[in-house]
Length: 325
Image (cartoon, rainbow, N blue to C red; front, side, top):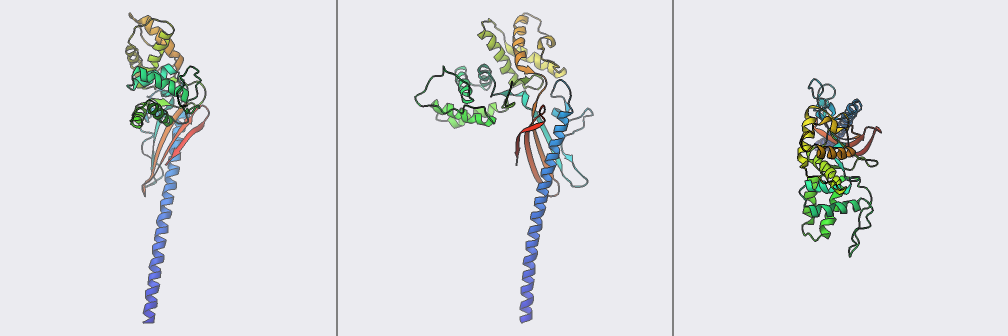
């Protein structure tokens, strides 16, 4: 009986040790696969940076490999790229031009107002929000009406565009809106794909080859508003000019900012078009500097994944923003 009990106890110890060893092996395997996914993601990031650095054109456009994800043969270079033999893993890459968006840290008040109107905000509310945003980011405005209670503006450039949601909440709350949280969230959701906070310093211009139709309209509206503020009497529908720019861009990239030479503006509105394009040329460019790179990697064996998002500054060859899961 003693021998049998000893055998039972030893068997229980063996089972327990085996179970612990199995758990440790699984945890080690999971850690290994997470590390594999991480370095796969970094490999995807380097692949994206290499593609951006190899683009030596004087312009960037949406039909280039970094944007389309396909080479001149139509082969995908960013989607489900496998690494190694067998179930080694794969990564997928997406690149968005940050210079295709409007920089809320440097955009003039007229442009922010036009941008807010594009999101369905009334003229009066857009003007108030625009002034509020300029004060929030640190602009000096001695003519701002003093309120009964001091407003705690951030008074420095936004580090992340999501910070704009806090400014909206503060504005709507002080305006007496009971639904200020929902209103701020809804407005930011409409605005977030049209704005950026890069570059953090220096003059911020928008790439005319990559800007979306929704972001192009405020740029043209701002040019028109600037001309009217200067005393120019212009009655012209800017949507026509936007369509001409987008139509030209489908087949021909803008190699420089001389829009007046590239677009046919002949007709009764030729003078108005030329004046608007001349003003628009001051705020656009054709070659971009900073790009948002998103990489998702997966270790095939265990399905471990890793997501990396970063903003890459091509001119200075450095990462200016980094986020990973």
